[in-house]
Image 1: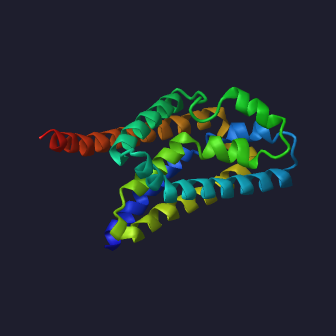
Image 2: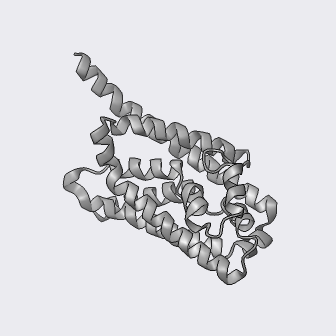
Length: 218
């Protein structure tokens, strides 16, 4: 049991952290908070991290229920979510901003806002469509009689939120230490990991969907 929980926690943490990707948010964070003093930037980072946790935990709790009400199956969402993550990963590998995460107009609109912590930082930059799809897929794997298995997933969301705060709060220092080249290398590595996760989602979805289709046609 402990080994299963540890494995699930590791898988959930790697998937959620890679798709949230707080390091990729550093340039956007610095651009949006350029008019703030360091104390205000840290406060913005804290509120963005808390907002990210609440958004992802909320979708993780109600996402599967909403899909059942709409008649959407988890395998279908795994395939759709995997395709979305694959598109994001391709942009990460090419080290260019992904429109699936945040668009230039959203960044420009954020610069002119008084409060940018929730929109656009927490959503859609950190807890965007890719992150939401990932948490819903991970929670969708859990059987109703094994509700406790959701705790490692929610714990992974919490750890990611804390890491996001630490990264954004130290964004200025991180950019100076790593430089643009270091950030690009990290982005490419994260993109490769995200591509593997995306393909696994698609494979799992197809594997779960086709047996169901065969049974329905029999």
